[in-house]
Length: 95
Image (tube, rainbow, N blue to C red; front, top):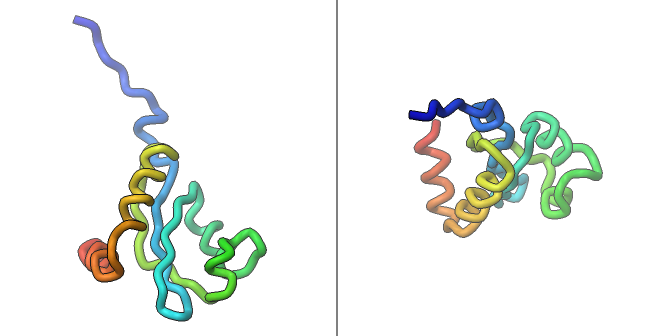
């Protein structure tokens, strides 16, 4: 029987899916490798998303780890398709 070894890249969380609340109460979903840096970008720099630039300040409501960019992007898409109510339920269930 061939022994299977874990690939370290599969074990280490490399991406996060996150949901922000904007100053107007709207929700923004995205992915990043560095949640702290990305939140700072959304609030202060020109690197923040166009959507959030006009809705500063934003605050982090939810984050979810992901193993890679592909799975993070798929999960981001799933969350973006949710209604506002379902997103708020997702956030509440992870508090």
